[in-house]
Image (cartoon, rainbow, N blue to C red; front, top):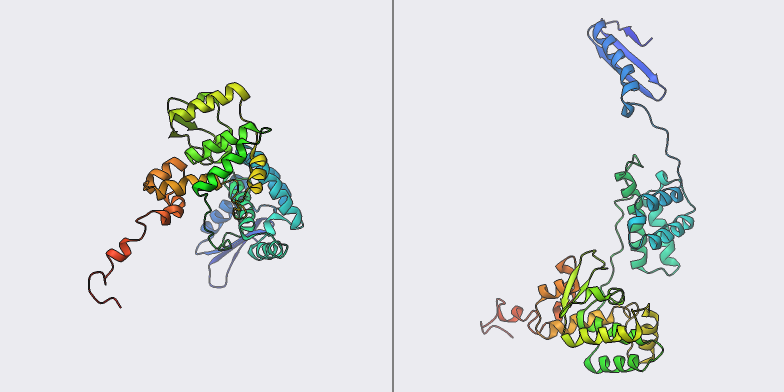
Length: 332
């Protein structure tokens, strides 16, 4: 029976309106018990949250596809992430997404590292997988949050940022200028060295983004438009270049090839950004303010720009001047 009287006179409700959803409670009177039973049955009909939901048996690859269709398609690098996520799901054996937990992710990450995947790449893949769960949960596609939020990314050793000296800049620009088959490469490199722009930002410039002494970058990583003052001579050179050769083409591959042909040997993974680092390093070494550099580079936070702070002439000198032993005569 759903309702029955106990030996002590109280009334017990034991009702299961839908299999898997059972309610038990004891009341002093039969009327209270009847009302509770009626409420439980009606709630199962009216309120969907009271009804047991079927187990989510969708595979990880299905969630990846949904993530791309509902969120990733709007990202500038959505297709690239989609390809990485599909490969990750396949590598993991395409498990049931709801059963992927921290232990499973840690095991997969260990396999990636054993195969030679770098810590940074492994961290990126982990972040992309978390995004699949988090975004679909926000969109009410999943009724559970990311099940492996507590697994932390690998702590990476910070690498010093390489930059070119003035003789190296002259060598590189000379090599690029002599490459007649790729005239755009030289001009894009000059823009990067003059503004600290990323290669893709400089390469995507169009005539309407160059004004009187200012270049405006709109296709930025942070999605924010930023304007950088430049010498009028540079503006004239760019405009003359476009009149002769037309708009910039994709020439990063030529730049990397020419760079390898010079005596310059940048650290692995820094060749495409070495001109940006060079601008930032020379700006700081010349006495430029770190906050101004942040605005020029378009960094979202000052912590990114602080990577160049050690190059400032006065960097950390206050540690000597203002330390507790300064002027005390107690220094050994």
